[in-house]
Image (cartoon, rainbow, N blue to C red; front, side, top):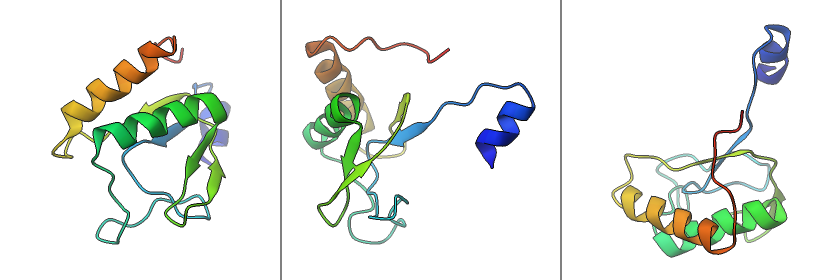
Length: 104
């Protein structure tokens, strides 16, 4: 509905994926407070970014693969290791030649 509303208003819409949040098999985010909701390991988050960029998928909390279409990768600034995660993600993307830029 949000995509359609943006289109009907003539606004761009950018699909976003969350690098530091767990996904359920149904494609939703694991509710905060539940096991697997938050991922705070910089190396793991960087690998998730690479997998999203290369393969268009993310691993769910159940270990399955979920197809995710996203042009924007999100990290939450309130996570204690947010700065380290951002640096790790940028270094990983740079290492494989991914151009980081605004989507429009």
